Structures are given as C-alpha cells and as structure tokens.
Length: 311
Image (tube, rainbow, N blue to C red; front, side, top):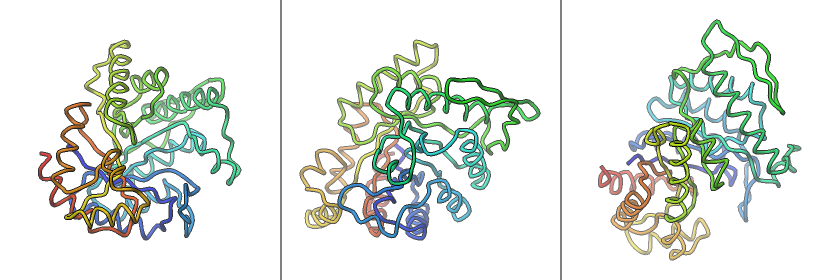
C-alpha cells in the first residue's frame, strides 16, 4: 500500500510552506508529494498569501527533492492549452529525473474561473475539450523524436508538431484520471489512465466506479489490472483522543464525521480503516489529504506508526 501526501495550497500556503512539507514527506519515507491545481480558496479559509501555480511549484520541488514522486490531483484542463501543457509537464519530468505523475481533470470550480478570467464551458463541451486534451498531451509525448504529431479535433488543431521536449519517462509519465462520471469517465480511463483515483468517496461508491472502469477496459481489450486503483481521504490521526480532536478542530471538522468520511483516529484505527478500504475496493494507494500544512508531527506519526503496518 503506497501512502502519498496530498496538499491543498489554495487554502493558504506559500511555496516555502510546500517545500517544507515536501522535504518532510521525502524524509519520512512516503511515496509521493501531490498538490491540487486551484487558484482560489474554498470555504472559510483566508487563502493567504494567495495561490501558487501547480506546475511552477512542482518544477521547484523537482530540484529540491531527490526521491519522491511529484504530481497533481488534478491539473485542470480549463487552465492551459494542451500543447504548452505537454511542454511544461515534460520539462518538469526532466527536471525531476523522471518522477512526475500527471493527474488530469476537466476543471470544475466556477468561482476561480470567474476570479481569474478563465472560461468554464458547459459540461458537455468541457468534457469534449478534456478528452481532446488527453489525446493531444499523451500523443505529443509518445511521438518518436524526428517524427511529427498532428491532430484535428472540434476544439483543437495541431499541425506537424515536433512533440518536443520529451519527458524523462518513456513513453510518458503515468496519467491519473478520476471522478464519478458513470460513462465517459470510465471510457477515458480505460484508454488513457495508468491510475484511477476517487477522491473523498465512500467505499461502496468507490467500488462501483472501479467496477465501471474495469468493465470499460475489458470492452476495449485492455487488462484492467494495468490501471492502479487509488483514493484520496482527509487525515486526522493522533496518539490520543485529545490529539485527534485537536487536529479535527484545526481543519474545521467534527471527529465523528472525520472518522466516517476520512482516515481519523489512532494509528491502529487508521490501519484497520485502510484495510477495510483495500478489501472492499482493491485499492493499493492512498492519498492522505493533509489540510494543516504546519502539522509535520502528524506526517511523521503516520509514517512511523501506520505505514509499517500496511506492508
């Protein structure tokens, strides 16, 4: 079971804050450090000092870390044109020595689009654009050096692109797709995903969606086992009930709700909960949503007392 740290810096974090968490993530032995791709805070957080860009952040972390995987849950297709996006991700993959993973979604948060002058098309068009972008980004990466890549879709046209630069990973960084759509999402995952992630879902919902992805893969003749299963869950782990309650309070959650919908409680409780998830859904990876980025003690506690029991 891989444990990865997942952060939401739009809620309030500087690059230095993220660097501190990423270095602690690496030192504690976690598999990866991931961040969201958002430009506006959510809920009651103040969002100060303001947003940081996902791929600029990961480029910096690529040079400041040496082992952990780096990626997004998830890059928004509405933020960037697929051609320049393929260049950015490939460059960060080179900068990291081949440690990037590309989580990619269609975009959804209307308020941040309005706040920064970004277009958020209606759902059908948005998903159509997302599907074309998936094909373009992966197509550019996988085009052999010396050959060219062209694409003619409804929303994007590329003509004789050299498809450069190439990522360090060949043929491409792993692609992570997620979401709860019942038809098009599983179909896209079957075609493009190396990993399918469900964030903040319950076990029954997750199991049903993983089954849809499996069926979609079988339908196109792909081995479903090629698509790793993962979930993202908020954490609130403590050595005592008082410590759990304090951590829940800091992130504005009730302990009982956090236990029901996330990974909260003692290390033993969380180990048991992850075991239930694995048995019910077949996951082999968990993204631990760490909302209090100043709480490196919790990060160390999970690494010391939860992770060793999951082997």
